[in-house]
Image (cartoon, rainbow, N blue to C red; front, top):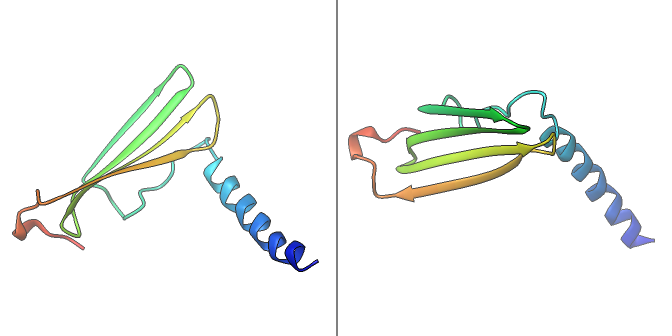
Length: 91
């Protein structure tokens, strides 16, 4: 019974986050405020949006959300450090 009580909140939270990630009628918002560059792609059921931050906390950060044929959004992130000039640091 204790395991069931612990499992219920996890399932509820998972369902809520899935609903948010599965709303493919619009693109997900930029995760760290306005991005330096935004690229969208929409063709043959594949949709993606890429938010690029050239110098976020001293790092180059590119976050891509993609969805195929109405599936939930999948997030991938690429981060690289050491390419920001010190006078360009933001956040």
